[in-house]
Length: 277
View 1 (cartoon, helix red, strand yellow):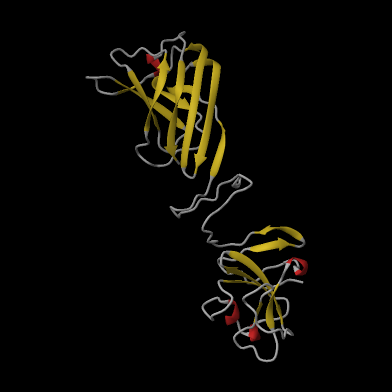
View 2: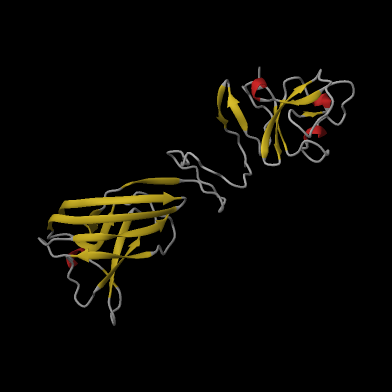
């Protein structure tokens, strides 16, 4: 049969959510309660006919409600007496139900569960395939690892043609923060009508609306921009593209153009980047 499940903070004392503060008028035989007693989770079942004297100092515990008269008490369920919770109609914000129709597992409950320390003996935390975003800045709502395929392109590709010896990328996403690595090495690279700024496409997640995304150093081989020696990548807002800026001592930084990579040359791009979505 289904049971109403209560969540309590203490066995005695009559304080808010203390087990013995419940009125027998709202309890029926079979109601379950979970109690955090000195860091140990205890499971109780209400017995409307129970007459055993109260005992909260040794196992098994017996607790009588505040308005106990001639009968009715909470009785701790030890291993041999544990039934199954097939429904939880009255979960509080911090309730956790163990057991589901005979299965000895964890049945999830909506709301926050306050746990001082999480010890993951299994070594894993699973997130859903589709993230469930949270507006709370203190809530981790996603984690994902995978691969992506970086590619060379530009503002106006024209007849840009690229073949790759290596075209590899890895990513890790933690919340709204994405870290990527990339390795591109071309086996063929030609263009005659391509124009505009160089782009690297294929980022695994569309970037956020932040106007200035971080810049990242990378290794660029194959470009010939006179008087410039350093390259930094920037993620374009609201896109899956990176652009590249060149800089050097005494020079104003300048966006790298596709024509800065000579046609029929060899291009190698190696580096990492991080951005926010």
